[in-house]
Image (cartoon, rainbow, N blue to C red; front, side, top):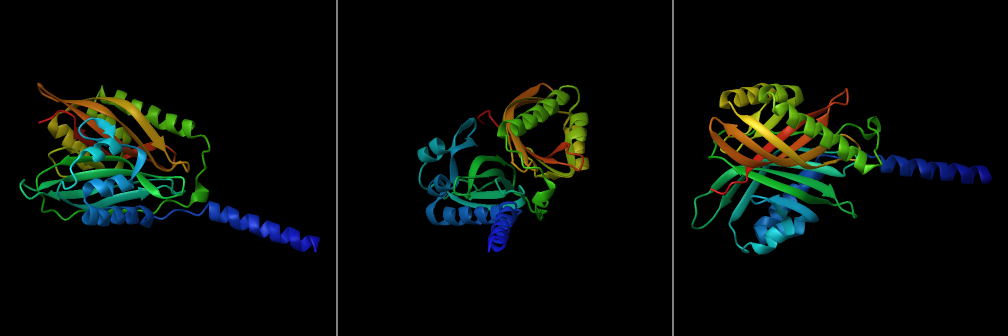
Length: 286
């Protein structure tokens, strides 16, 4: 009897361990996107956003502000929003995810607004994904067919679970600051060192730029210099997905403009953190 009891306990412990280490699926964040978009169509942008955001969520409108404060203050009917994700990731343990893609806002009186959005999601105490960051940038209407990039996370067993959130966060802040320092010497060289081969670059006024080579060509052709300052970061406990954000001053010739930025980071096989996505949103009001 004692041997049977021990065997049962061992089985239960093993089952719980496997369950606890079950790798998340990209479908989870895509479903969160669908639920949000469905809610927007039924309740409007304000009510849907208030239901989807985390209590500490931040939006950039144009400065970084409390999402709850911002959405509470806007009118109930602010146009019809259509959002289509084109790239998304979720961490292996499912505690962090992001989605980005195109959006269209139609108002009765104004011209349609086209652009790209970036949302970062984090699980709450119940395990449900809640939006913690939201950023968007405008560009003219595009006729191009979007390139979709949805990838499943690596099996969780291949990643070490980091139980100290401050250590993980500090590593990303250090990486972000190192990239910012590199930008001071050469924008092209900095991006070449830190970009993934399949990175995406979202710059206001332009369609998404996909791929390291095309991003480097864009930065070179625009002849821009970038000075950036990190203001925060976060990393998944499974150490396979992270984000950073801050402010940037971008100069082209004698023209200088201020922006907010969000960057999404992924580690390569050597555990070096590389940039998967970067989005800028203008701070200066038009």
